[in-house]
Structure formats: C-alpha cells, structure tokens
Image (cartoon, rainbow, N blue to C red; front, top):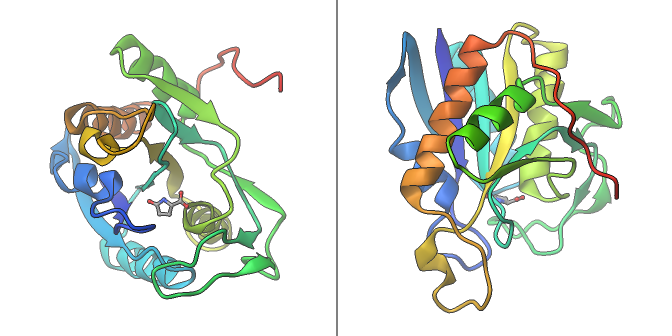
Length: 213
Ligand code: PCA
C-alpha cells in the first residue's frame, strides 16, 4: 500500500508553511504502507497539475493533502471541497480569481472519502486537538481538495483522499497576538495517525458530530 501526502509551499508573507514542514519529516513507512511526500505550489491550477503528476508517478492508494490554516485551532479534517475559486489574496503566481468555478463540468461539491470520523476519534484519544470542518475556504486548499476529489470521481476511483488543515507553528505566532499554534511534533504525529487510521478503516465509523451553526 502507498500513501501520497502533500504540503504547500509558504504563501501570504509567511517564511514557512507548517504543512510541508510537517509532511517532510513524516515517517517514510507506516506499518506496511509506504509514505511518499510531495510539495505543492500555492498556485491555482498548477497545484493540481503537480498533484496529478505525483498520482500518475506514484500510483498511491491514499492521498492526503495538507495545508496551513493560520488562526485555526487544532487539526481540521476537511469534509467537503466546493466548486469555487475566490481569492482574497493573490496566489504565489499573482493570480486572484474572483468567483470562478474550478471545473466547468464538475459537481457543486465533492466530499472527502477519508474515514474522517475515525481519524478524529484517534486524534482525540491521543490528546491532539482536532475537529471536523465543513469549509476548506475558497483559496488554493479548497481548490486542491475539490480538484483531488474530482480526479478521484472521474479517474482514480480506487483512491481514498482528503484534506487536513493545520495551525501555525509556534515560531509563526511570535509577532501575532492571541493566535493558536501547534508544535511540529504534534502536527507530524497527527498526520501519521491520519494515514494509519485510513489504512485500517476502509469504511468510516458512526460518530455524533456536525455543527449546529
Ligand atoms: N493554505 C492555503 C493555501 C496553501 C495553504 O497551505 C489555504 O488554506 O487555502
């Protein structure tokens, strides 16, 4: 079995991106599953081209894309990607789409098919703050989650894939007030748990989750 785990390059004026910092130091093997890592450009379209090249090259069974969600608390297990590019800030190539669909022939939204509830349970049992999230935003991370699930739906139907947003690293918050962060070790452990639980759970578990507002 093989898992492809991706992390983005820094964006938005940050010197580092905790997503790739963490992905880069994950174990290369989890049980009998090989873990391959790929950096993605924080650029609309190009990020999906690099992702698809990596899928073609590695032929993974599992794809987990990871991005920074500065200001969020804990790991966010993203459940849904929407067909919308809406950029508050330009991407790393200077593109700033405003209200365009990602795929003209795509559904309005696609759901992650990772066992996100089982992952949440295991993270919580390991004292790693995490929650299920129902929006990955409208920037490059949502673009990659939506694009990944579009590819899975159309072409790579055997792949299980999804997206995890991670908080800032402590060093990114030194000049920011009241901003949540998570240590690199904890993010890495959380991502390794996500891979392990995906290997172990072909189906997700039933758990009372969701949001009331
Ligand atoms: N986070 C951004 C894009 C790249 C990243 O790491 C986002 O949440 O869209």
